[in-house]
Image 1 (spheres, rainbow, N blue to C red):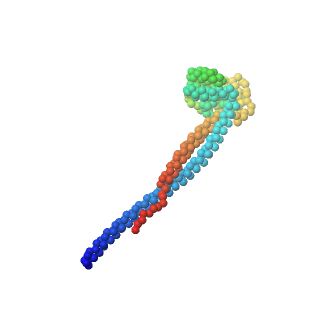
Image 2 (cartoon, helix red, strand yellow):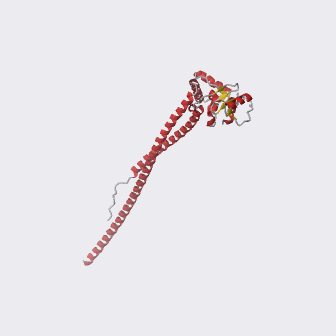
Image 3 (cartoon, rainbow, N blue to C red):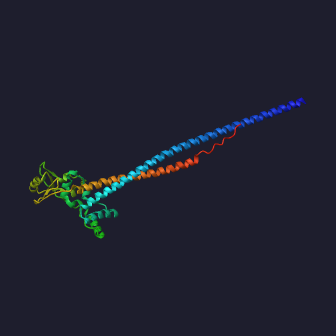
Length: 316
């Protein structure tokens, strides 16, 4: 009987040891699962923290872009207002019919894709500001002649203007302009051949020689009177007083605020500034839209990766 009891106890002991081993294995497995769970949760928290930081950085950048977009918008509106003012100054320096006609030339050439229309003479050259008054006096309304490549282009544009009832314009077809050689300019420090102070493309040289080759910039009217007779040239001072080849003198007060060349210079400068502002504004708006999409993506990712409550597996 005692042998049976001993055998039973040994069997119970083996059973208890087996169950104890199983419990330990289960406990180890539970601890491993818990560690893995905590590891995943920690990684998720780090991702959320990184996403929050990214969202904060993107938001700050977007606010900066909003401010820049507002500044550029104000700058663009200011440039538009200044450009309108320069346009009005130039417009008021010519008759209404001529202004409407030259604008019609631009519009028709663009709409009908007519090549070889280069623009008004005033748009095709640069000159030092100190010569503005002299050049304006010499050229007068010829500054608004429209330069074209050929007489065929001029004829087509005239026909278009007639059909549109858009006024009258003088065209200068480069292939038909044949300014004479010379003239012989005086060898004097008191005079400057006007055409030599103008900067223009070589292809436009016939047009500028046609209008300016017989004009001198002179120190004063006494010098002008002398050389207008001796060299058969029209002479003009920096202040705009002039004496022509026939001996007639003209002059008086010139309102520099109404300078045509100043208005044209402002138009060119403001057009370039406006184009640059509009391009920068478009880039800022595009960058803002891209950042908005990034912010939306980050918020979506945060919603997907936000860790839930920790449910720790039991471990004995």
